[in-house]
Image (cartoon, rainbow, N blue to C red; front, top):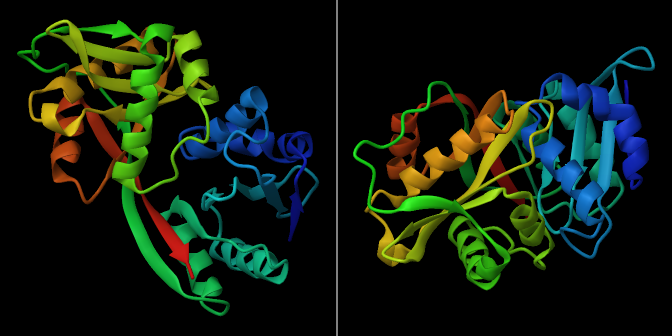
Length: 280
C-alpha cells in the first residue's frame, strides 16, 4: 500500500477519478477543485503548481485515499484509513514540500496531524460541518426583494464581496476573477435584490456526479440580520435542484451558531465534521 504523488492532473484523474466519483458528497471539495483546475487552468488557485496523490490498497484499481493540494492553501484530504493519513504526512514531510496545513474530515485530519507533529507544530484554524439538503423550506415570510442571476454588470461588486467573504473566513482571496467570471457565465451566482440594489449573494459549484455545493454565501455586515442570506441560499438551492442536482450540500463554520441555525431551518442536515489545521 503506497502513495503515488504527481503534478499531472490527467494522471491523477485517471488513477483516482473513479474513487472520488464513487462518493461525491464525501469528496465534494476535491471534485470541485479538480473541476476548477480543469476548466480555469492549473494556476487557478496560485502560481505554484498543484500536487495530487492517491494510495492503492491492493489491485491496480483499488484506490482507498487521495489528496489535492493547491498552494498556498491547505492540502485537501479524502476520507482515508488512519494509516494512510499518517503515511502521507511522512511522504510530504520527506519531500520537504512546505505543507501549510490540511483541510479534511475530522478523522483524516487528526490522523494526519498526529503524524505531522513529528515534523512540526499543529494549530487548529477552523471547525466546519458539511450539511446535506433534505426538504427545502424557504423563509416564510420572505424578506423584501427577490432573487436574480448575477450578470457581467455585477462583476466588480461581486469581486469585492468574494474578497470580503474570504477575509471573513480567514482564507486566501481569489487571485483573479476567472472563477467569478465562470460562475456568472454559467448562471451559478444569485443575488438577492431589495430596494433596487443587491443586498446578498449565494454561489453554487458545478453539479458533479449529481452533487452541487452552495458556496459562498455573503451579506455585507451592515445588511445582516434581515433574512437576505436565508432567502438567497434557498433560491440558489432550488436553482441547483431545478438544474438537475440530486444532492445539494453546504459547509458551515461551527463557530457561527447563527448560520448553523439558519441552514437547519432551510432544511440542511449534518453529514460530517471537518477540521482545518495549520502547520508551523
